[in-house]
Every structure is written in C-alpha cells, then in structure tokens.
Length: 409
Image (tube, rainbow, N blue to C red; front, side, top):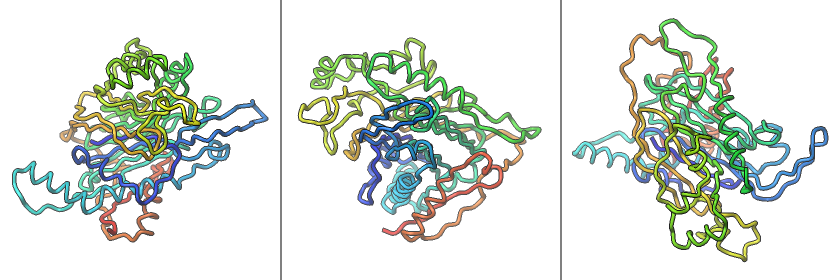
C-alpha cells in the first residue's frame, strides 16, 4: 500500500507535471492512497458581519480559498485535474511495464503478464482537502462497505478550510480507514494545542453511518478507531519548538535528529496529549516546509524573500494504527511544484481472507469494470464522475466506479 500526502499550495496542476516518478518509487503497490491539501498563500480578508470579524490569512488547501469556497459548494475543478494526472500516471504504459518487470523478478521468471491497471475506488473532497483511493482492478471485486465522512475544523471551529476527509472501506474481510487532514496552522506558542484539539474532534466526530445491520454480519466500524487498520495522513502543521536561530544552525549541518527533538508532534505524542498509541516511522529526511517557490531553499534561509519568515518544520506526516501494518519506507519527494515537499510511505498489509458466512453488502463494488480506451476528453469527464463523492445517502442507492484501461500516449 502506497500512501502519499502533499500540500500543493493552491496550485492547479498542468499536463507537464509528471507524477510517475513519485508513484513508482521505490516499488509499485496494490493500493494507492493519495491525499492533497491545496493551499493559497495570498492574503485574503473576509468580514462576516452577522457573527464576527475574522481575518483569513495564508490558507493552505486544495483550492484558492475565499468566502464562497469556504461557505458554498466545493470547487471540484482542481480535484478532477489531479485525479486525471494520477490516473494517467498509474495507467501509463511505462508504469505498467515497470509493474510487469517487478512481477517477473518476484516470480523469478520471465513470462507474459497482463498489465496491472488501477481503478478509482473512492474519493472525497472537503473544500481544500482531497483524498482518493486507487486499487488494482483485480481487487475491485473485494472492496466493499465504502463510506466517507468529513469534519470541518476551520473558521468558527466547523468550516471546511481545515479539518478532515476520511474514507472507510473493507478489503476482503479487513477494515481500513484513511484520514486525510489539514490541521490548525501557526507558529505561536500554544498553536500546537489547537492542533491537538483538531485531532481529538476529528476522532470524536468522524462517523460512518450504516442504514441497516444484517444478522450474521460482523459489526461494521462507525468510528475511526473501530477499524482494523487506520492510516492518518496530511499537513498536520506541527512545527518546531526551537527558536529560529537554533533551527537555522542545525539546518546548515543537516542535523535532523537534533531538530526532531524539538518537533511538536513528537513532544505532544510523548506527553500523551495526542496520537497516543499511534505509530510513525523514523524520519531521515529534511523538513518539508516552507520552501521558496521553485527552489531548494527554505524561506528561513534568505532575507531577500518578501514572504513572512517561517521556521522549517516537518508539517507533512503519515501515522498509522493497527496490528496488520508494517512500514517499509518513509521518505519525501523532491518536486518544487509547491512550498511543501510531498511525503510518501510504503506499507505491507495483512488482510483477512478467511472469514465465512458474510452476506454480500449493498455497497460492494461491481463485479466487472468497463475496459475501453479513453480519449483525453473522456478521461477527464470520467475522472470527474469517478471522484466518487460518495455521500452517505447516495451510497445506499448506487456505487459509481471508474476503471481506466488505457490512456493515450
């Protein structure tokens, strides 16, 4: 299972952005879980006369945020573009050839293999937070009970410029929950407590409703922690407790371990105030935030920048909880597309395939996928439809799935 998180700074991707190097490194996976925050860095002031005066400064989500986006309908345009790029990367001929070669090496022989293709199993967007799950087409039949849930933790404590988008699903008979979050920002003393509160509220308020329970079926998880395996990813926004000068000196020496001793997330977790009992892999990579645009230099490393000085930090993280998960890689990518660097992890996951007497679910994915070549226009429209914004009430009636067989080169 590949899990990746990236704050792309409110920028829509162009067709020249190549995700294949990120998605194929270090090894192909059976499942891809990809979360985005689409931030906007331009200052924006908004007056809400009926309640209070609020100044919204430096948003970090999927779409350029304004009052209309925060309060009104979601802008699905950027999400659809990212879905298209992910689908193209996962289903490109080069990627398929790489997967086939991996299979040959694993089997110790060279034999004709059918190219592995990936289907969009589910996705969910909440304003600037976007999460998608892709699976190999031969696993589609074994995905069931797909549910989504969103929790807003932004303006006034409930709007969607901050918070979480979560997907619950069952693979064979093992339950998974993927939680993509963008927590409270800020470097001031005490801001880490707001992030702790965001985590607590997301754990408490995330609910996956089930309209019926059948005799003979196990209880389906309704909260995050009821799942067999949980993966939490996103821009968690925890900063470094060290002062700017101390951080700058350690950065010049690439002394990550000394810097990590000041990492707020580790401090808060060790104190039992957040993510108690959760796991995170060892970090052997540089802080992922905040870079100058199209540069390998942190904002903190230059005094020529017009941007507000930010202390570099490991804002972008992946944590997990569950007995059947083993982390194999935890690294960062080096794309300069955003002021954040992407972070990804590769997990091996144990799945229960032996449970008996389980009645089929109304939310089980279809038994077959339409496999046909797609034009550019068709690919774009299919990805838009296949975002599977699986609102709970719609999921009880139907299940929309996208299976991409090939894309034009």
